[in-house]
Image (cartoon, rainbow over all chains, first blue to last red; front, side, top):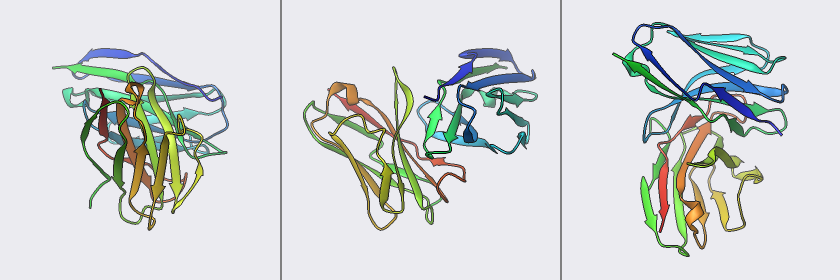
Length: 112
Length: 114
């Protein structure tokens, strides 16, 4: 059974810092991996999608990497801003089905 | 519309009542997914549709839960004889095609069962 773990559970950093959020999964036979952000009381916003054949994706200040063989993904946020404060969720979909299996998220606070 | 919409945004009901939650996916998206987000369980998959068919119902927690999709568009999630443990935020997502694309999420319906 696929399990997705995110570390740390919570993170507080001063504005301007570069930071890394970690995601690990137990079954490497994934179809793709997505990073989402969730703002309080709102739905999820997709940030980056990495197909299983890809190593990384970039969007603006965000860079997500995927090491499928070791079951890890990282989300790198450069020059963090208070507006980046949210919960970041990692999710994988498997070959045999297309449902997303989520980690428990990392709550990020960027202090002004 | 521009995104996935869900209604109602909030629903408070009494234990034992039936509820219907609605999801309007992004126009043209053939795949639709339902998830549940609760305090103790995090975000969990419930069911997905490809067109009007639901090949994977494995995530539905009990036979009190059912979902349908008509016309390849709107979907309703029905919970019969609600229990307090059904209290959660129910999220709907859609994607252009099954599995290959980003899933776009709606704002969710917060269900509270008293």
